[in-house]
Image (cartoon, rainbow, N blue to C red; front, side, top):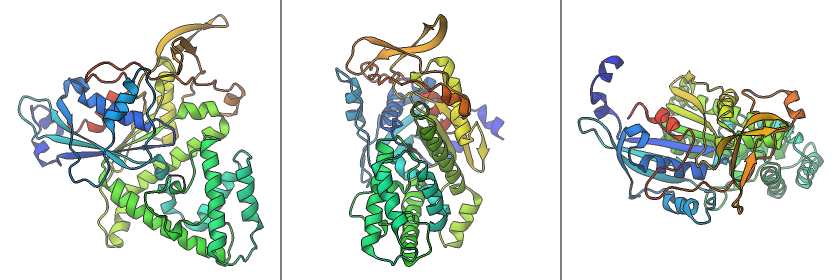
Length: 443
């Protein structure tokens, strides 16, 4: 049946499909999500987009939508400034909508693409839905015990360990523990570059006053205090399921998950192991949300199951920081971390990519110690001179202990590449391929 329709200029099934395709965009912290959204819009707005499959595209009006509009023009202006600068990261949910006219011999139904920007911190709340407080506390405390030493770590762990075995429940002690734990999480993200930090809303709270049940922290004990914290943990899980899974992820049928895998390799084995666990847990949680078991559970609770996320792109960012020969390894490494090498699991088709939302470098061959290596060069922020960079070989799979005996070298802070004038697409790597994967069934 599928082969029959492919011979026609217009697939008649188009008229039965929804006119709106919603794509969620999220990822780990500092992965470049803001620039990615800008690049996605620029790629679609450019004449002859996606190899001519799109005849025309225009930014849509916001209408009466309750979500703020992603500031595409302001973000592109920042990248096109002289000197260019990276735009500020977004810290709340926003929407970027485009009206698309597809190519074809006969008129086809107009298509509306909506990109929904989610804070990456919230993505890591999904695995919590399948845990109870005791299991989450044990796993979290074991993981955080391996974190680099710091004053914030010492303060929180000393507080938790000093609590009596039968500590009484009380708002004051719960609030103090929550404050110390949240401070610890912020330190791990800002100073140590870690990503697998839960709950995500402790790092990126939603607008408005925080409800009382936000005041909890991991505690491996059986006490009146732990039971109070468990009740708040359960309230947090319920709020996550209602607002993130049902309301937000329930609005999308495609998803992009972005991560700076190169940065994790550079930071070291602790940061890489953290990113590996974060991506693995997020991927598994997304599969659970799209599984038949999740749909059955929703029906048993008297709810309609949210629409399945049908396509997921796991993308490693900053692919322009390594030469072309290494980008295949970067894509393979992202696929290994998420177990998403062109796999189909349930209703979700998954694929790994290596992308650069704005290419800042060019490839060249550099001779190091008498040996030619595939390297890149670009301009550092605030410096007009070209700088050469060869960070090392990207492993195609999670590396073993021997990899860390020769550390992945520093990744330069390149300035944005020069943008073309007008509505031309931004210079990118892998963005068109990712868009074609996400949209090939509706183009």
